[in-house]
Image 1: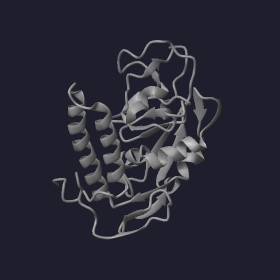
Image 2 (image 1 turned 120 degrees about the horizontal axis):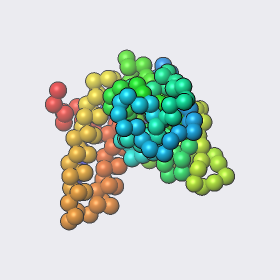
Image 3 (image 1 turned 45 degrees about the horizontal axis):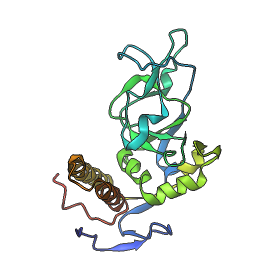
Image 4 (image 1 turned 180 degrees about the vertical axis):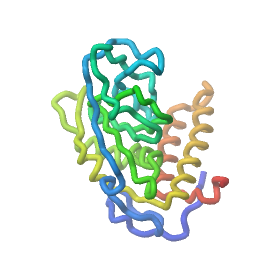
Length: 235
């Protein structure tokens, strides 16, 4: 299937990325964030919280697969004092800083406020300048193959079952950005297209591996400017 392309491109200045739409700008993530935090990992009980009245600490698996899973948490024992300042809120971008090589750097955007779910120390929390970028666009960008390669390259650790990345690994990453309206169009297009692909994947008759590859390729193409989605998404 062919996709519409932008009428004009320029060299991004990033070797692996190549050309991008001429009106997109190149930034480093460190110039987009207004806060970058890491969490806390006290000794917790084995069960997850049972209501919004309990305090819990998120597990690193809450971001696996690019979708925020609030149920991936452990309840904070009542004798421990919670740290409300590391609770998570809508539009926070969470990134795993420690995991297997395949999962480290996995990112997901929090869907709503969870004031009593706290960051663990294996998660970074990024809050962005919303006048420049949207967290969902950045989250999709972090999942592209080019960025994944750089994150895995910088991951360190003696054990293959647990490697780490530092804050600088994320902050120094380059990202090319359209304006906010176009970022929203791209994330809407990705959401709609992924819903269609996921529906096909659920069909046992569908070649699921091929569809997963197509899903990944579509996201990468959209957030790196290889598809002009401006006429494909209703406003």
